[in-house]
Amino acid sequence: MKRMIITGILTIGAGVTCLMAQAPPPAKGAAPASGPKAPAPKSKAEVEALQAMQASVNDPDKEIAAVENLITKFADTDYKAIALYMEAEAYQKKGDLDHMVIYADRVLEVNPSDFQAELMLAKYYATHTRENDLDREEKLGKTEKYANAVIEAMKTMPKPNPQIPDDQWVDVRKDFTADGYNDIGMANLTRKKYDAAAAAFKSAVDTTSHPEPAYMVRLASALQSAGKNDEAIMWCDKVTAMPEAHPQVKSVATNIRAVAVKAGGKPAGGEAK
Image (cartoon, rainbow, N blue to C red; front, top):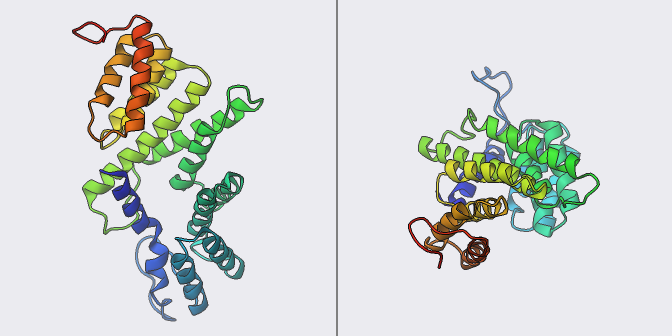
């Protein structure tokens, strides 16, 4: 499944804000519905605040203002975790990663099992932690904590919206599991634990519902760094043969392959080119 389709499906789930905001509050004295309580606005004013928030998604500054309006005026809103995640995403779009982290952390204060916030933080710490950071292990430990939580949650995660077809939800769960493995792999690259990184990237490659050239390139890089040059060449050749792989990704694969060949690696069944 294409990443853009995954994003759309999650919008259906996380975007329950819009769907629920258009529904009137339950009538007084109405019998409670069976099953888990669904989020619902408690007043017409909250409905309007939710609708304003949903309408602002294409403008990060307006989205931030709309979220702040909601959570300030309606502190007990059922949509607080969703709103805070939207604000974290808005800051991410603005390139303000410090605030992105603050609001992703606030999401987890409200909903400790929010997998989207966990993945956001796992990726942040995996990609913004450097080898010589004094707090490297603390930050990479957060990557592993959040990524492993997502991997475990995806085993049984129920659909956020019944409109999502079962087969598509299975693919979504696979792809978010793969994202978690990818973040763990990147953390181990920073540690220069190349065998552990390669194992994580291989899990990402094997788990995702569709071929992901970026995972394969990272796997090849980890294998080459671990001295497994023949395997690195094999994965580089797979990437360069993929019509859908981005030219930049193919270029990286070509460079890794050249290093692996120089180090003595050979492709299976033939001489090194």
